[in-house]
Length: 114
Length: 112
Image (cartoon, rainbow over all chains, first blue to last red; front, side, top):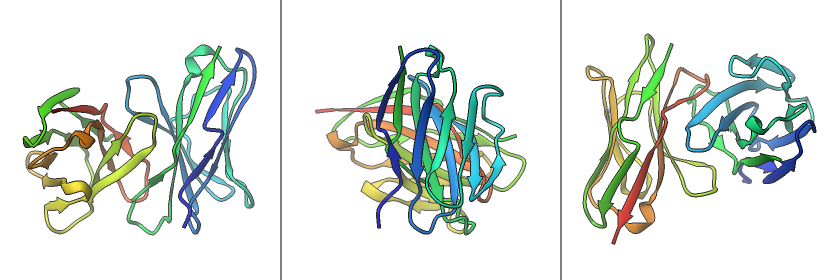
């Protein structure tokens, strides 16, 4: 059973460009979470999605950031017009949503904005 | 609102010595508690979790944690650490299938 997959593992963007981060949850998991880890800090919740629905986006910045989890395909975290402060590791986690609350994490995408 | 406090940002310890990493939480509702480990440039791996039942929880790699409701704590312990335990450890709290709220992490450094 493959784990949570994220790609790319490393992404370099210039200021003003767009970044697209992909997350494929574990097989059978219908809940996806995105977290951001800034250098030397813990993980901060960004958004929680189920298939075709955003359940909780209380951690998402108001502008430039969006997320989706379509019926088919991976979840996408999109950052428009990136700035240097967006440089961070972005982790995706998935869960089966059965009430156990255990989340399985992917290896992360490390975004560097130059 | 929920929050997690990890009191120690760094814990140095010699190999084969015992270690305790402290975690306190605050929440107005029942919570689930977790400890995750992060090795350099990797994702998070679940060490152990408390959902209900016995307050002493055993996890992987010889780690265990005790849930103390009166002190709102969930400290992580290992009786004898190895060099390979050197990593960042995160305590986290959630409610049901909700988002995880993480502490700021404790860097465990094991010396030979």
